[in-house]
Length: 598
Image (tube, rainbow, N blue to C red):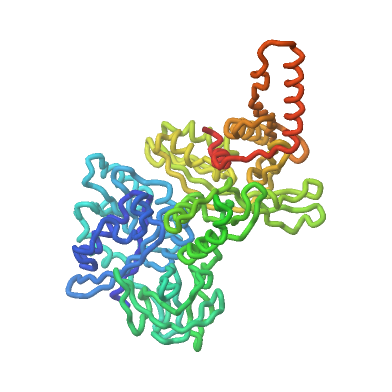
């Protein structure tokens, strides 16, 4: 055990984490020159295109230092806030972390939040200044920032370049020197922490774990403690670039298990594997069910593709256990699914993967969050509201509570004013403002999650000219004055456009939505009324004017009464058409509601 080192990498998006991982694999000869490619561990097309890590990966490297052989287990983590639970479990499986900071971009919001996660787990932090070969790098200033943040000495900060490989050999030596070996009892009953799982179409679910106590052997009966189910370990092994099967994985090491599980929901990240014959007394602490934060409806554009969409979502869930969905139907869009996501990026990725990997054309409705509703009859019992259509009737409603988040925004001091204005407009309350350096400020706000879901991130990036970084975590529910706003088109309610919004913003948002829909809905032969209503009270209205057919074109002169007769007949026809006419709402109307501020 004393020659094992388990570590992860903490970094903000685009700070060179995957490139540095490539150099570590190359210098420990884990991957041959022929197999090496840019961002070796990011194997999804989407990851390579966007330059982000969506799925965490683990890989084992062999390294010789001072004539002793060491096993280095790199447990890669996604950098984005939506996957923070996966990050927390990966961190729990490590003893050390490499904190990577871009020498040109300095410290960002996600770096700080993941750093706090690592410090809570008592990890040994090795600060690294990456991209020192860039002409725009500012190593001295950024080193001072890291020293202030961690309270370490400036000589503890390693300077490397993932691109050229400068300083990487020294980094490998420091990993062996500074990161402690894992602690555990090899003779105790088996306890292994699952930190990730992947789906293999031939062998079912493969769970990645770290053995905390005891050992796990091939052919042994094992039990997953969160689900209480027992399986046989058909194969165990370690994770090189390709899997390497072994008979036993010992205490402190990282490996994978194949046990023929077909359903991703049976393998939960954070669960504990124990022996079925000699089970451990308690699971490893820290396990929690992943809770979706943002909900949206996904509907097939062609209603005949409904079954195909169901199959596609089920296949996608095999790779992504945090995706939750259930069937629902809408009067405007037909049959579809109500899906729960961890955040906005997660939603975007699921939508894109459906289109790419399964060739599905889908409509996504306005995303919203879960609320808690309380009735006057039972003011203590909370009812979960995932969809505006589930909103309690105002007659029986006691109060509604909405989820709040603690948002941390790091930006240049020139943009503090516009950023504050944006957050206050989104009902945020400022908690703290601190200067990290003379021209970088960290602002902390408490704000409702529903305000962030819409267009907050895009607007934050545009007002700060791309310099602001944003990170958040949930802090619970608070009572709020919320109302359900319905959109009526020609007197018919369109359920896909309903939303739950704050009373103070209702008139403003209602008016904007009506104006937007007036532009997007094609004109008909009759007037169409577009209305926004809170309950029975209409708060905004726009009218789409009728297209007029020139019925008098065939009258050349003659008596005026002939023309009048034709116009009267047209008027009657329009009246009748208005009663029986139906308005088709184009797909662009559903999408445009998301971009109201433009």
